[in-house]
Image 1 (spheres, each protein chain N blue to C red):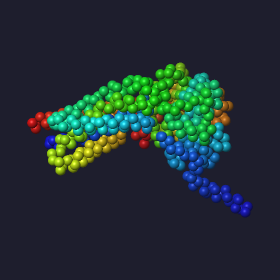
Image 2 (cartoon, rainbow over the protein chains, first blue to last red):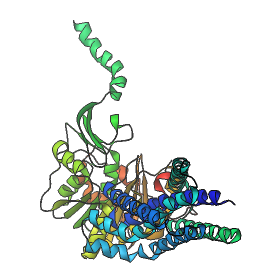
Image 3 (cartoon, helix red, strand yellow):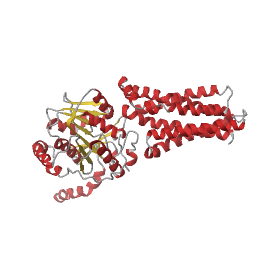
Length: 198
Length: 295
């Protein structure tokens, strides 16, 4: 596979992954904080904040020896950083709810604890991909546009598939584990493709 | 003139079916969660969450006789709660206020009881006070909170209830975290010895099976009262016998009559027959697509 196709595939999947995790986050917070608008508000705030900072960091990191292998590393790190969500969503959230009785700030703290790090890492993917895809200044806008398209389209796909179908077929943790596994698999493919090229 | 007067009711009769769709909107407000609408129609005043009460009515009162229950499910829920309890419940928890007709009635039937209500939407509480005659007092308190958050807190504070009424669903939307095995386990752990749980639900199609197996997984056999709604009556320490039900129905007959409750008709609804697919997957916090299953 070419470097371009791999970059697009990774950006698509990263967009998919972020929205899948965000929707399941609502499920994980509901037992302790309810499913009110402010719980969703807290979740979306944390995801947006983490993504925005991730974009900054990803752009910066792309200036130092950018490579497909490092992109693969980002994808794998985001997936592994999602793993703690599985054990943390039990008693830890309950303790947070006890410590912070106001469910608005309780759910905000819970969302920060569970989702900030993996989403920050996922946010780094897109600008890093732009760096790998752009070879000429003239093509930069077009490439960035294609990349936004692919990653946001991935987010749309992750949103609809998770909320319409996955939650009907699987348990929340199973969906999370499945998505983490796909991320790791894609990271492996992306990392190995680079060694083959070299 | 006389002919006209005689014909007038006839004319009204012809218009009536049309007028039925044209209920009078007397109040509307948009809350953080939904639109809360109050309609009047044919001597009844109803709280609805959808225009023209398209998807069901939350709560209704008879304007001429506000005490009298206008909706059948309120009779089923109240009767279920009272007949299943060996002693008159002293501590009652209700999740979901609606127009406040059930807590109001319980307040009168059980004057010594402490009644706590968890209602998430302050607009619903406001409308219940203004349009449905709902009154709070030291023995009837409303907590503005998500039902599950309330239950978890109550457990931590060591509270116990003799009866818990789950009434937070409507035809349109089910808060999915309030229909899982974990949630029902939490409710069960709030019960004092001998306590009862009453669930007023709207499940249809596949959700009916899943809801049934979920309640059965936590409570075992339960009474399943079916009308337009479904009222589930469960008691971890064992269900009442037919004789006990009859005896309690008799006991409450005088106080329930003024609410328009026909205790004999209600008694006939108590059945433990299971008419669902026992293989249906139990709903859990990990698997709770209640609204997707309810189509």
